[in-house]
Image 1 (tube, rainbow, N blue to C red):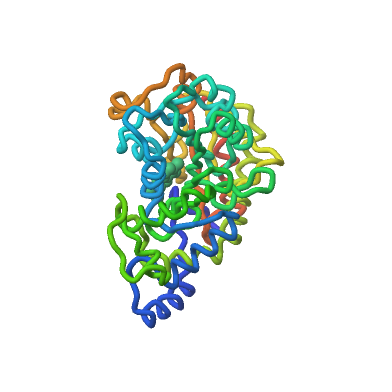
Image 2: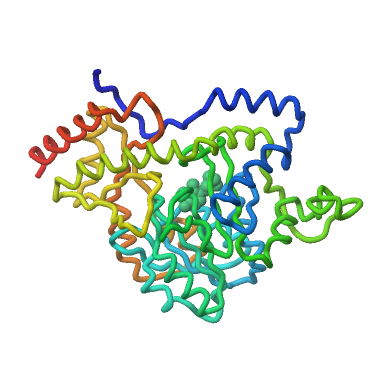
Length: 380
Ligand SMILES: *Cc1c(COP(=O)(O)O)cnc(C)c1O
């Protein structure tokens, strides 16, 4: 078969399952937040992430904002996190008047450097927020013990990390709170959506109130009060039943999606490990991956490499612009000595990876292999 140009991402749709579930949705005639499908999804998440409680939200961004509300932050409270992350990780806390304090990433897996966290803790520190970049766990066990020792909260922004593990424990099960994303760029999606995982029992009741506009509607739906009313601050963070119906049609295929993505990840890994010119993501037995992102660290001249691939039909991307260098980041955050962040963020290249029967066959990987040889001969 001829090699076809490959886009960076094609969102997966399980059309048959969605159609079947959609007729059920029509019968239920319930489209707004909290119903048959959201209950199904939440039960699934609770079980598979081994969580005390799981709430669907309309995005991971919303789930992060709920975290910030749950921590009851005061102005100038400090939240430790990496600068190499998506905007929402920091923005959610800035909205509540808190200050993100950035700690550098390590050179091996681009996750927050656990050796540098304690130095950044002050009397004002309320929480550590980690991400597991590319679905590869950060040093989560050690970071959990640092949080415990210093009596501060641990939050996992697990947007990349559904069905990844650290020492056989699912990511998202370590933090007091954890967040997932079901945006259509992620492994499992429903257009836009997310989840808040609550592992700290004392935060469960309040999280339901925050998700539902500051009301005790959850108690009403469970026949615990006669009518519901405004009891605290909150917002409208729930996921509609339409999205939950789509999401459930994906969750049931979770294992299949992840297996295929991991296969693709490993294929790339094997090809690129033949060349000294690229640094590969560091993976080890302790960390089971989910194939969310396959990335390389190039030695230099990322643009030249990406342009060459694009000319040859392979669409790659990069991210993140470190938050401390962004316009808002300069205004609202602090952190210094972010040497690895500055250096590595300029050298990351991400390759296509998605669940789709048409792409990622032998001819694709052969093409990648030969292109790399050509590139290195030409530009070395
Ligand atoms: C995608 C992503 C988010 C935001 O997810 P949404 O569901 O789009 O709000 C937050 N954090 C990280 C690390 C992400 O990759």
